[in-house]
Image (cartoon, rainbow, N blue to C red; front, side):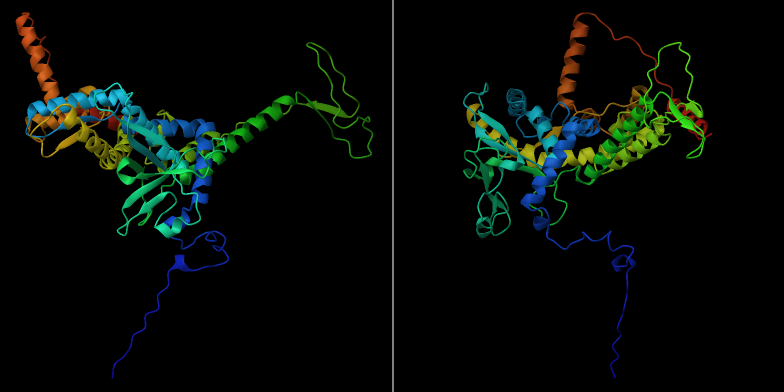
Length: 465
């Protein structure tokens, strides 16, 4: 005889009760594209742009994120077997990047991804460009990538993007004029641009997601609350300051106090003596704003806002007054790791596509030969250490113990080790030629890091006390 075992399991989070019914009322089972339909994305973009344009913290957070991720721009290092070709490509690509302002456009794309959810760029040939390679980059707002047709679902498209049977983009529909330009002309006209010429940078948070949502999306209500609370505190403080003296009486209704019209105003003159009506006593309104919890509230709100960007509070608020060296460095580790992840994604989605298109034209322009594989890597700005002496000591130990390389150490600073060593060799040779010697510098103490750690521990103890 076969016995069938029926397992009945329940999860508290799956239960709908009168207490949690309203909280989960907006939970749905929509797909990624259905949840982020064109109207939803348009509303979110408009609200995110409004906050970034009018909220100082929102603008600062977005700018800081773009500056930290992009910095002064990426530097290219070629890794092919031809040293001369490598130097030529690196030199000419750097000159082309400056001509098209590639770092500035990348920073704009990062800001657009933060507030719009996605960034688009079109590769095209610009004959007016002051560079032998005429490749250029034109940034497009997400509003212009749309298909103004009710039949877009019939061609395998998702609001401006047409996909093949394998899910690869094959065509983008780009409106000839921005929907918000106000011209009213060409609202239904669009160009069908092949996918090879379009760069689409966004973060896919769900499988099958084809359009991006603002990075600051979870923080939009918090930005509004922060502004409302600040305005409420200011309004309360102003209301208290506007009333110099308040007249009150302890007499009951119908008592013997002198009759005074409600809300009667009295003008005061300096050094004057004032006699109040019989039964009335003057008092002054206490200005109790801002409340003692005002700073705490703003700190917690900003901390929650910055969390969705993996940004620590002291960077979001530009205020490290409550930090010591150790805690600040610990918070920055998660942030810098997040930046490295974003830079890696940017290299794959944006920079490698740009380099491939640039090389296709540069090989012909500069007559490069014998380059079959375009091996390369990108360097980014390094992050400055709070204590340069401590970092130099640690770097020296890593090199002495063979736990690192010059290439890795230079890469931490966003520099090409070959370029730096060649420059250093030139400097040393010139110093010898001019009979100049390097000044002797004392070696750092072996116990310096441990002493610093002891100082940090003592600082932590004093702050805790």
